[in-house]
Length: 217
Image 1 (cartoon, rainbow, N blue to C red):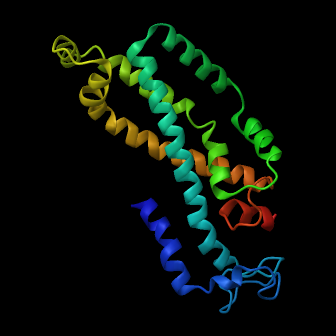
Image 2 (tube, helix red, strand yellow; image 1 turned 30 degrees about the vertical axis):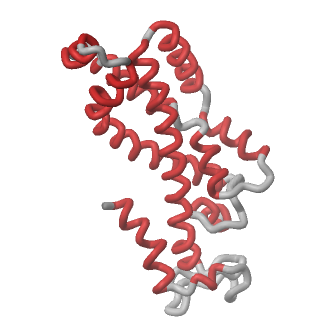
Image 3 (cartoon, rainbow, N blue to C red; image 1 turned 135 degrees about the horizontal axis):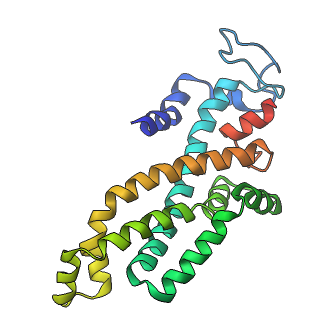
């Protein structure tokens, strides 16, 4: 419900606020809040409320793309590691643990600084590239428990192959965990994107909440 309300800003906001005021030089710079500009204007002559209306759905879009992509990678790796075990589990667990010990923001800063022109989608994919470790560990831990259940053993005795067991027997029981992990991944993606944008490494030509904070600083 909260995400839906935030998303509605992108659809209802332009009907109530003149988004053309978000252009550079559209109005007098550095004005305090008034009836004409409810949240004032920034130093570039842009209405802050118009920037908020345009930037909120863009930031939510970054979080959704980063969360979904990161979760998809995490689900695949977690299922593979937890179900098959052996060398695959050892390798995936080792790589995941190594990446978890590295400061994520530091890597994101290096990667983002190497890209000259960033789009919203590009920003989301950069964040998603380091958003898979948490989902991988969560799904793996659940898979280690579920693969020992009796109905899984019965499915094996019934002649089902590995993929049929994973997607028809185990996956339905993982949906609540995947949904909860998605919410966490989206919020983490939003915070990571805003962190990069505050440092000036976001798409400066597009409105977003992080760039709004950057310009205010």
